[in-house]
Amino acid sequence: MRISVIGCGYLGAVHAAAMASLGHEVVGIDVDQAKIDSLRAGRAPFYEPGLPELLLEAGASGGLTFGTDIAAVAGARVHFVCVGTPQMKGEFRADLSYVDASIAALVPHLQPGDVVVGKSTVPVGTAERLAVELEPTGATLIWNPEFLREGFAVEDTLHPDRFVYGLPTDDAGVVTPAGDAARTLLDEVYATPLADDTPQVLTDYATAQLVKVAANSFLATKISFINAMAELCEATGADVTQLADAIGYDVRIGRRFLNAGLGFGGGCLPKDIRAFMARAGELGVDQALTFLREVDSINGRRRERMVDLAREVCGGSLVGKRVAVLGATFKPNSDDIRDSPALAVALGLEKQGAHVVVTDPQGLENARQAWPELHYADDVLDAVRDADAVLLGTEWSQYRELEPDVLGGLVAGKHMLDGRNVLDPVQWRAAGWTYRALGRP
Ligand code: UDX
Image (tube, rainbow, N blue to C red; front, side):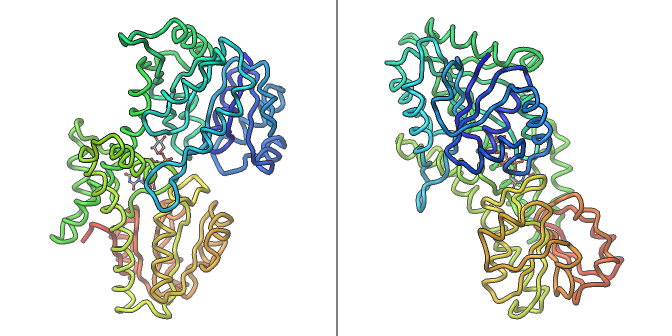
């Protein structure tokens, strides 16, 4: 089937390549010429494992093309809207201008019977509004949120946990005939093997939009819960990693997303919980989400606590101290530095007078552009040279495997601050290091 994907960022580029790998004829559209040039040349415009291979494969078969001209969507029957919904500057609300612009651009090119599939994360109520705008075209809107994680985006797109379809319903809550037809077409796009055995939740627009923000809020809450426990552990000498293991054995709780440390960052969780709070306020139910304020502030406090710990191990002042920060990205296997906890700590240290050297396997180019006031080293050994303290901010596998003796020969002060609780305290202490972490004695 010929399909179009509007927006070729982390979500859209992966979605376009994944759909092409299923045998569809896909055209990807983005307003950013540089991004399109890169994708056309078969190069992923960001680091995402598995994406380069998928682009090459799809490009070679001729089933995947990219462009900036929306007219190229002609002939496509299904159109995926995958543009970003960033946080508004100085506000909690989501900026919907890219979603609105995509729909406005699509409208003149839609045919009756076409399906527009909304995948962007939007405040509940957006789909209902967009459906009205699409009405004159005869196209049908399905809200089909995407749950992919950066670093696993290809895997998550091709093997999702579930499909959620928000369908148009009549006054009695029954899916309309146009909704049924649209659903059949979208099923065809996601045809086997993708849809095999994958649970499908067929619902209304409001529920589908809420599913996405509810899921991200739950994940953020889980992380902040364990980070709140880390604060208790710090006050009592307990160990949050053991606590997480012990409560995680209860299958009702589960061990995943209970890793205490510097907390969550990235382009989704922080802005999604804020936009959700803003939307709840507009709907007059802000009290329902006041706990998310706490989730957000626990998350922010961990970053401050890490700066305090660094000052402590540096003898009470960071002025003139050299600190190596290992990791710039918000999580491993990504080059994304949006709202990165590691970089927030690096900037906090710099603000208190430290000389901070940041290193990262993939995120340095983005970090250099965003924060030119920090210092950068391409190699971890260069970053730690003469450092008074080393801080692990992002748990890249190569940092987990660092040898205390190798680093010990390079640094000025053997102080390891483990922001992600991934190093073995026994091993580092045995090699003569001070080991400090969040929520561990
Ligand atoms: C998230 C959701 O997981 C995904 O389903 C949604 O579609 C988009 O938002 P992503 O932002 O790629 O995905 O990252 P995720 O793996 O969820 O991690 C988010 C942040 O939480 C990272 O900064 C990570 O380091 C942190 N985190 C995660 C923790 O601090 N502790 C944990 O236990 C898990």
